Amino acid sequence: MAALDMLGDVDVLPCSLSTDVFDSVLERRADCAVLPIENSLHGSVAEHYDLLLQNTIWIERESLLRIRHNLIAAPGVTLSDVKVVLSHPVALSQCRRYLGTLPGVRVVPFYDTAGSVKHLMEIGLQDTAGVAPELAAKEYGGNVLVSGIEDHTENYTRFYLLRRSDEPLREVEPNKSTVAFSIDHRPGTLVVALQFLAEAGVNLTRIESRPVPGKPWEYVFYVDFRFDEASKAQAALHALRSVCGEIKELGRYRAA
Image: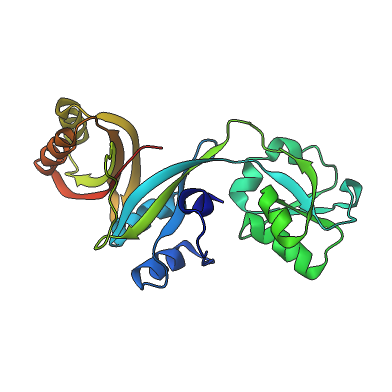
């Protein structure tokens, strides 16, 4: 849904794992990729931050998708027939309140939201429902038993459009940047880095830390910041380079 919303009429290459998504772009089996980076209820997708740092991938664009979860089963199956509910763990966690009202129903994590509907339709399960978008019901011939079962209506996921770093189609007027950096493991270094961002005149909108493999208790920091002039973004990067051991700009794009 996010890919079609961002790109229009494109051929979608499905992948089972996030690493496969990155490999498909890097090996030119796909022109670009659309991946979630953060959900307003569940938080960030930590693995995708790690993969962005490890690979020569550039964030070209971001989008926001309103997430609406539905209980979907095979035609003819009623709500009273349902004994098992399948979906991605993140989707299940966003529907805890409703799922808790279903007596005797077993909630089982599955690899994908839409994939849960595909699975129950292919096998012909008559006691199982999936939690997925309405598009999954249309795509695989399922029936929506209950719509809008998420705990909060203000449920959004932020997606990145990713391309290879050697051929990005950069936004004409970007106003947001995502940067990863590491700092010396001593008092005050993070404060200094953040102060440099403030002095450069950019607006820090998000900060995320991820552990450095092989270096216990050391971290890579990921920051998003907004700017109204490209010169301010450049000043921010220049200032960070003076205090950071490693720095990588992951993308410069238009804020959704």
